[in-house]
Length: 87
Image 1 (cartoon, helix red, strand yellow):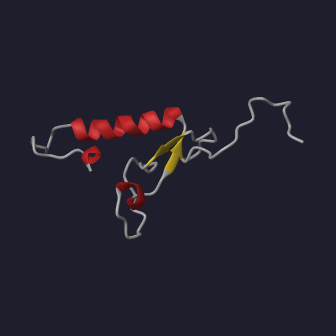
Image 2 (cartoon, rainbow, N blue to C red):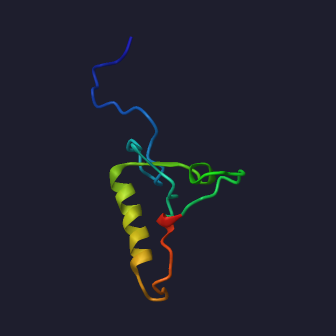
């Protein structure tokens, strides 16, 4: 028997952002600090090489904004700098 008295009951993974209890509906390779974290395993693809995290929409947007602000800030980069999303 399922409990349908609470239709807003959340199921699935929680957001990995510290202190957040929301549903982690977005899968990302970014850590809560905004960086890629290697799995430590011998990997043949990007998907296998980095850990997966789950985030709610708000925290995923916040992390992506931080990444883009780091790669668009041109204080010490030249035109040959490769963005981390090009990997």
